[in-house]
Image (cartoon, rainbow, N blue to C red; front, side, top):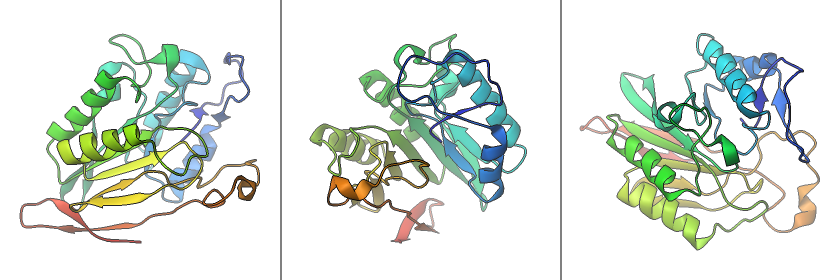
Length: 239
């Protein structure tokens, strides 16, 4: 959810080309039609500064009583930003964490709201470690990263997502976004990395076909899970 959620018109925005905000009623509509897990770790969640972050948190917390299962990414402090969210699914715990880019001065701290930074090794390690240690049947990590319009992830990003998060950290599903284009999908011993899903909904986006191969569509993925005798969910099939 790459926006600040607010119904206020008096929030100060930084001097840059794009500052996004969405009315809570719009997000409530998304929740009402079935979007029940939201990542807020991205370079537009901080478009209206600390007040905007607090607004987003306030409205999403209200929606948790109206169908939203969980949201992760920005937090009221560092502990809240790094802590995995727990969602009960058919008697099992599914865990969800998120990390992104673009926080700048709004990096979450002990007494400051914000998000953790994908580019900061200590932040990425902390998010992966907390998610890895948490007890649950399935672990999902949402990552806002990389360069726009790049259909091939950088080798350094592959090492972080595939090797650090999945192989070493035991994360079951990594979902990448930010580039606005679809990137590769990789299976690693039953675990999955979606390096980039592209755009699902981006009002006003230009005709992406002009940017060449693989840049004119997005991916919508469905992962079918089966529960093993050990209680863990594993990917059985992917559409």
